[in-house]
Image (cartoon, rainbow, N blue to C red; front, side, top):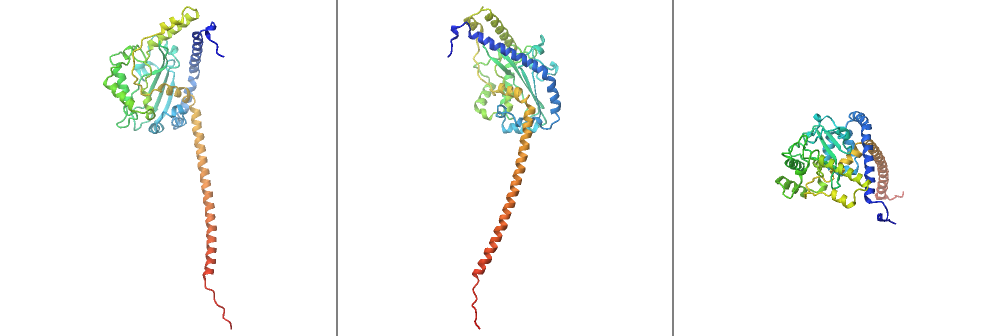
Length: 371
């Protein structure tokens, strides 16, 4: 039987705080895991680079939450041209800023963000051999883990442009439009150090409003005319999610910690909590082309990447089973043919006997002549 909390000294806020503390512990465990496993992943990468078609074979065995986003046309490209896939927790193990693949998304250099950053932020890199579809040899997609004052927490990103060859755009122009719209809305803002983007800076000027530009209208029409089932895997590079800047995230974290402390001390009521966390939000129009982009990123980072050897082994076992089945089918076919030939020989013998008897029966009987 359920017991009302009103009859106890326990509040829902106290329970929520305990859950958040568990989240904090899990985040710190992840941070330590990233540091402890970093050398092992580097060692693994060196070994895997010696295996031809390793990552295409891994993708062939990808779990359903990844596989159902890959269309047959995507498969043709990925299986023929993908040479490498890697995942990093870039906010705590970030390369030098000068070599960052997406300089517009660099975080602030104030403080030691590389050790204090959120380990839940992820970077996924796909490398390709020369192919008939696009000119890029490397595609890098970054996801920042962000919180907002209204209680949202999750992965946000920025679109990544792909240089498609003429007539080969698997997204039907949708990814290019997303990138155009993003650049149109960020134009005039500082890119380095104070970018008004998910990666960095304030995002107040990026709120979507009712007044759509020509490119936004084109993008909206494309989204409405494209079924979710027919969306290319490469449209994932256009995922944005909620627009939560680094500054907004930091402010939300500070506010959450302050409210937690006040609740521990009994210095804040539920009504006061609601008033402190309320925030006016501009009405937004959804121009997201890959709504499940964060789920796909997590499936790659938390399942496919750490389990790559497992999926590769499964691919090898499946190939071995297929070869065994093929050989068994050949043997069965050979035995069938031999049995069939034997039956034909028997049938031919029976037919010859029947023919001889018929011939004897059909010959006219000769009358005996008495002497």
